[in-house]
Image (cartoon, rainbow, N blue to C red; front, side, top):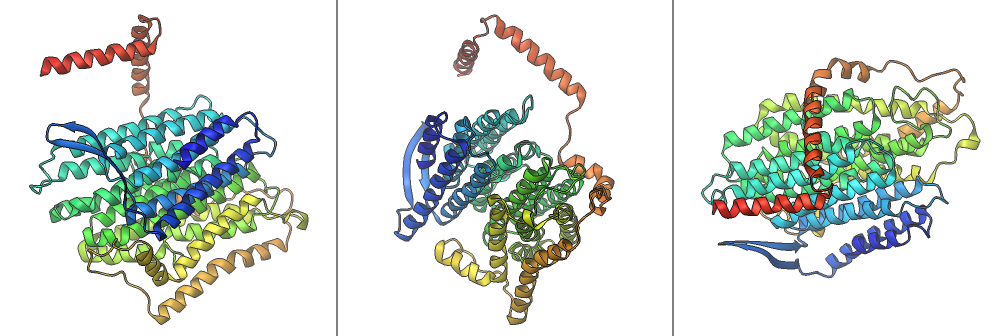
Length: 572
């Protein structure tokens, strides 16, 4: 309830308190939610917080349930902490004395709050209701920010949540008795389409791309809204049906996951927008969770939560770094950054190195270990997919070089500009967390077993951890990730760049992405112009029909509802 109360307070203080203070208050509310989740877990909170019937239809009963089980607790905690850091970056990007953005922060605080509710609910009504609320909150946030006038991104986000809910309902209600008889293909298909829509997996990249059309400080919240609900549904619902699928169906699951991964990695390499780069690499990491599902229930329960954590944290680190660069340069297009930013980005660059390395699965960061465990699982179930995974991982790693090059060229010209913006510290914090987790994976695993007991009790295997030589090599790689950015930036600092130097050099990732434009287009196919014209004509006809009611749209909704009720009674 705290995020909802915080949203009401933000609305009430819209005209009376500076927007930055309102945002910092919203950040405090989310951090308080995270602290209460930790305290409740230590005190042994009853796992079932709320369980009431919502709808009774014949023999089927639909209940609204909130369960603080190990998986729900972990995802809700990530939603609160990640959402708090994202809102902190948004609050620090607003001028100190600016007012009138209370609605913006009210909508932003609702997004991780409702996502946490969706993560803690295995019940169908909440899983269908949460994306719709988050989509509407995104619509309000983007409209309140005034950043995208005339754009259809708010409408895309508002409709994506509702559309995903319809696919999930269709899959789970299509054949209730099918799961008991072993035929769960329709249910799994409904879950996957739900996840595809919410997480922006190719070719349904629209929702994720729409959220990242917003300015970088607002796009920080994107992974902790619709995508987190999709990941929660994937981790919670899919294990019950993986054991019922045949081996051929699991191979198909691996194939479509790899296809989505390669397309998203190509999209990451092709795009010139740093915000869209962050969105595409997140989509690629979520696609790997689908690949992991095709490796069987045992591998999925072990590896998928680690991959989800890496996807959320690394995307947050990359997004915070991009927000720092965009604040300096005023644009996120790598081809438009033809001048040096006004101040140094040493701290943000270090965070970007760790976050990008974790996203690409480079040794030394946490993302390396889930990627290693996925390769172990894929070698046992579908060895033919290893080459495709390596190809996609190479494309993803090559794509992450583009922001690194741009950050490295952003050198300060005088020591008076060495002072960093407070928001520049946030990517370094996330990057340090990923580096520490990568240096001690066994310790992270032990902490996970202690914090979420029972999550891995039903499985027989254990992930592979390094021996002493391997641990030493990983620690050295982690130290390189931390020390190398500072050392290289120090060398860069020794010479001041000439005033006429520009950032228009041709980058290898740029040329490779251009060569792979066809695959990048498949990740987010554009609607043909003839379809746009047809939709415009349909919209005009609808407006003319509604005009009969005096443009009172609620009367049109009532009339349509009456027609539906009459048809239902006629069919019965």
